[in-house]
Image 1 (cartoon, helix red, strand yellow):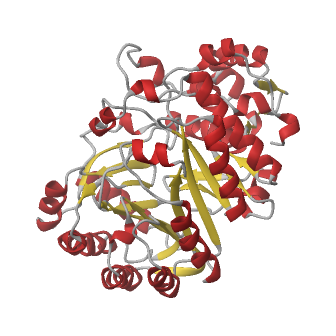
Image 2 (image 1 turned 90 degrees about the vertical axis):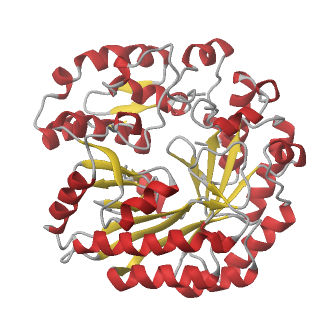
Length: 463
């Protein structure tokens, strides 16, 4: 989206569409997972996956440890100052890898490997090497595999960057959030720009194929003027991709967020203005908007895929890879295997107990119905490529799109009249205005959302 194409958004429009809604990292969303899906169901899904030996896997490893708690954090983390406190966890992670691999004797090729957190670089080089060796002992990384991890520049070192590159990682994502000292103080994340630049430059020098920077808008004390300085600094650094996440203020789910005084956060219109600044700044620098909150350089494979409407998404983010099944390892990790979603237990002690008993750590999940799969396709197409083809849906799922989704299309008509969506017959396309409200555009196709109690908070707000 170029700066010339940015639409005008009125305060009245913002107020009308600023309501709780999913981010659609998955569909059905994680709030629909249930306890009737456990280790036995996950084992069956893995066994079904093994019947497709030529299809590559995507693997995610959750490293939950951090030295301190950022008050904006929405992740599942374990706070420890002693880095060796991770050793017992890694012992169980190795055993979980073995448990999963036992169900996949014929399917070991990997196209995506991602370490997330928490802070993966909380681990010592020795521990990271041991974990990587265990993974590659049981699974084979394909030559064109994405091998990525998230790092916190505050705990990274030049030697650690060198080690990770030598180990085989070719992509890295760095948390920045905001360089403004007052904002950093308010969210308990002191991270000088010079510190981040030093680690960023080291990763660039060492030849990482892709470097991503994460920003957050809607944090305490952010203003357009101060956030613009952060945006300018990031453009000057030149990451290949940038994620600009909306701060999900969900204190009912993340009690530590209660330390943030709500009056210090920008109100709806001001928060939206921060994202518009990001759109303008990255658009002017040549970046292409990917999905609802990512940006990529013109030559990036995501940008090229968007031109062909071939951008995909899984729990690791936007991708061009045909990832198929995704297996999650570690506490709270989520998997997507053979038409089912699963999530591991959320407490460290429960994770240890499950693995020590020799069983998978799955706590909950859901087996998708044919209806879920059709709606997932529609929602993913809208969220990732800003368009969906009714005829493609008909062909894939053997239904008549306009009959099957008649109630949804009636609801979507309001967005068409707002200028957010264009219904062109065999292409339903999201306009530049609609891209700013893409979660709202996808929500009519979410049948579970209709059942939610509007007075009980579940999701963060869409604006």
